[in-house]
Length: 498
Image 1 (tube, rainbow, N blue to C red):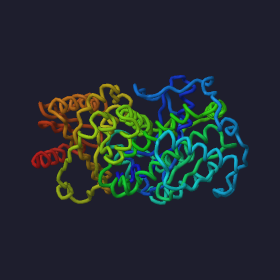
Image 2: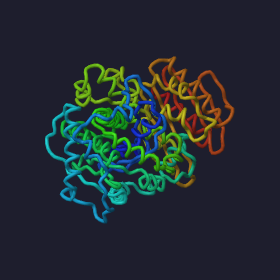
Image 3: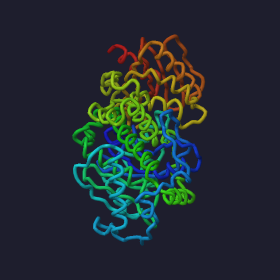
């Protein structure tokens, strides 16, 4: 599992599914879906994929706006008549931009003009745009994604995530991604090729128009702030700092999500809403619905919390404050989760010694990176075993004092054994103790009653190994290894370096 590939894909899509969900539940709240994110190994391609999903009731925030009712979206605009579905046949080849009908091209240009006015950003050029069938876009994305993501890398991901308690052992990550791409594609903006693709169903109706507004927001971001070079959002930078990568993605998606909601509120038509409702009425997402619990939560992180982050900045001084965030990007999921801590609360750089020489023959480093506050929360609240999941509020409180961490996973190919170390610095001793107590509850449910209880450490013997959590000052160290002797060696090495 390589953090370098976790989310170079800018997932920019499924807004229309969420907007529809909002309309149906009448809650006036908007949430978004992010497919392949965070610690999971991602393709190193810079080409974004666009997925859709059935998002249940999204996370509410005080700053989110309210969608109008169908009767309120009746103001006549130049797009009212144009939003009628335009029947089109399934193409066998991706249609070039010049093949887009004049009616649809006019709608796209109108949406672009509206998005520009709402976002107060000026374009610096045009964007190549295509309407593709679902199968065409799926084939395009699968070619790019699986060119850089192999079954062997997917296996490594599964090993690490299983050790963390987030996946069942042997989970087939490669097949899961294949199925997810087949189910969830909606559109994409490729910030390396400056291209935009939107799935076209039976026309260019409400779902496509809403998706286009979101995608074009990403194009404006790129033209004004340069996603790859200006934000340093690349494979290499994400490999070096995965937390920063996750925070930038939340900024990008939160910005586009807020903008898309404003477009929907100000410019959508009655027909748009009808189209979206009709689409959603028949939509099914069995792959997403049956995905591991932590993945379902992680998928929507950049949309729900990203939008709340952007709303927080917007309420300070409008889009100028959001623009400033592109010049001084957030650097951790902690800052996204707690926007009031941005930009002053910087994550601490944590290091641990290389344990490869001490582990002996056959061991090699499989993965190394930063877990961050968000994934610390997911481990406690949304792991594979339902009985080991803490309530969200309890896990949030336990992860809230995160200050910085480093994790590393070693693997022995011959024996199939795993060593996992998560070394975390907390903001205070009290924060460390709060996590310590929460982890005790979580791990006791996962592994059974602890077999070693001391004032500064807890140990659990379980099939396949031994798990220990110890605390020292404001640090906690979680170690999972084949036996107690190896755990003690690792603990003494790490604590000796502090």
